[in-house]
Length: 326
Image 1 (spheres, rainbow, N blue to C red):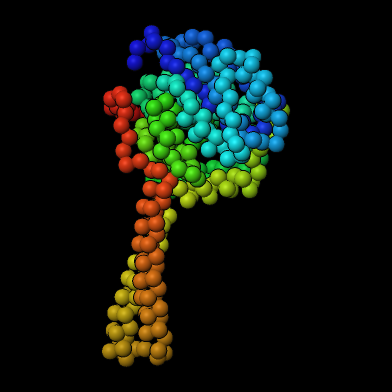
Image 2 (image 1 turned 45 degrees about the vertical axis):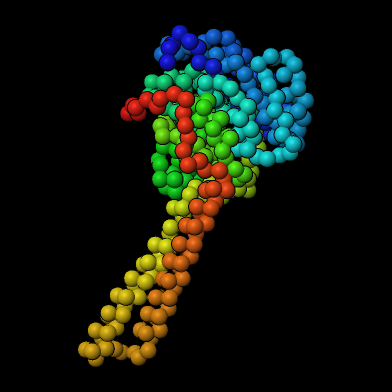
């Protein structure tokens, strides 16, 4: 891309309880709405900030109305009820029109000044998706941080991709990719799983997390577990295949035990009569049942992929550059 032509950046912020934090955050973004040049010489401008009201308990709606009246670049999006952070983020992405889309939280932990740094990283390595990678631990308790890290490790194994497993709500996404995902995705899809469906080049950019702006985290352990469980349910067929694998192992064990029992029978070394045949029958038919359940689960997974809106392919309006090693 021509460095002289500024990249248009849309910022999407899902708002649940941002009554007191949004004014400060928008004030930090305001200087970026004028043409900026990154350290690598890439020109960009934040030309719209989409505040998606997710119907929280505070008066974020009033704050959003005041901000949209004060700043011409602030565009409110009103949801009819609380749908959750990922659904609100996708609603914002569907309305964004920038070349790149930044998603960030309302609490001020993520610094808008890092947008240029993330853009440089994306353009240098020809990336479609860049996650912020905090260089300092999140400002939460050790238990929550440990559980969060464990959940992300599990997710990376389930998705079969170590890059996307270490995700963050502070993301830079190719605008075309983001809008396509928002158009295809169905109800209940975990946002980062959806991004994994249609992105091939994912990277991470080191950033420093700040403390939240005068308010505790809006996520309880229960809500965080709900996010993790949604991730498991939409991550694909890898967890389901464990059922089939266990079934095959059980049937194989029954065959091995059968051969061993026959050998012991003909060498007259069977100390107790009857137990071997019963164990073999249980192992064999348990294996058949588990294998059948695994196959049924695979069919259900295919159906889920259709229902969730997983696209068979995505057509891009521009050529995809060869990947550059990080």
